[in-house]
Length: 493
Image 1 (tube, rainbow, N blue to C red):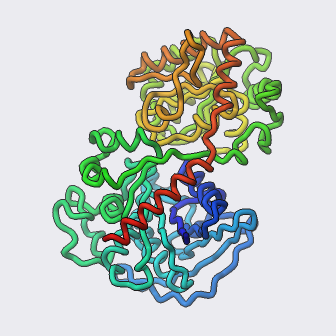
Image 2 (spheres, rainbow, N blue to C red):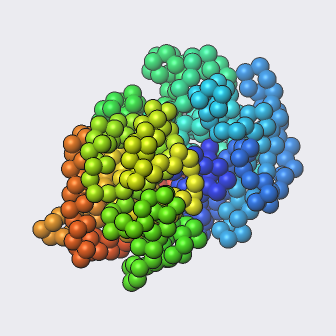
Image 3 (cartoon, rainbow, N blue to C red):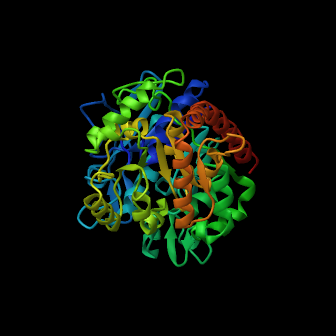
């Protein structure tokens, strides 16, 4: 099959979260299965031009009409020789050559023209394909920024012979982010005016909703874990107002768990950690712990005290409102905490105050650093993810591989991937708490600390996690099957 993955971010070119890891790894695995794969994303300012060899493609792309403007886009290409995946970049400097991907650094809010930026992206992708004369069997769209593509193929491009054999798959990575804009933005999309009315594919409480259009028009929809697939159809708490739309398409909705890239994330070959280790020889893990304590200015002579790692966006969704309620009690326990992440200002202030009060117990890093993320995974004993909801989650999977025992809430992908430790059978891979409750969070941490005291049992728990296989190979095969379902459905329509 010819497969195009469309995403607003792709690792290692542009990343704000787990979506980039998915769209960076999945195409390579699909290509290895024998398919012809291309990826496309915007050409952002943060793309390191010196690091990669980009080629300017000489394509005669017609100007793209957006509202009352005609915009001229360019295309760059990067060929990954190791994977046979071509990465394409839609280059329009006024829209994408900015400091951040989505947020205006002046206001801390979304760019006001995000609607126009990603309308151009969606329209531009289809024009680029035509000028390249590369007609895909599958266009796999990811999140709201590419959700208009399935809509265009079923409306403005419905009679275009170039896309006659093309099916669409739309992946929901986090339904809380839907691409909601004022009603006036609908006119910029360029579809028939009579497609906007109450309960139409584009309309959402009087506003325009990109993600809703993607869900309605895509041949097949999927999300990133089986549990999250069920949760987002149940209630507005998880579905964010789209639960009814998803329910109406439940027969076309699938859940495929994200994989992880064990080339990037494995303690046996990790280029970012000072000491490598394996299930056969765990001695490097303790040495990494000492390095982590040193780097965090925490007492390294207390290496027998467990370290709890946190790498996260600091937001309510990630469970930090729970943490805040019992933070002082957590820090009264016999542990150290190393945190890495950025997010809501209220949590920046909260954690900096905690660090000020307990400088020998917690280190707060309000930034993002890939090398430090790897060291935290390798040097921590436990990893905390108390999420309110978590579509899939990747850090709990990294943690398993690094023999860092996860403490998680039973939701979404966390519920699908972490088995609660049973002290009677000694089976399990982590510590799971059920209800979104601060006392349950605190109790889960206490349970982990108690088991940690028994080194023999703790080692068994570490090795159980390391033995799990969440590689992309399994997930890639499931995506190929999903593509076949989408093609079959598109043909019969």
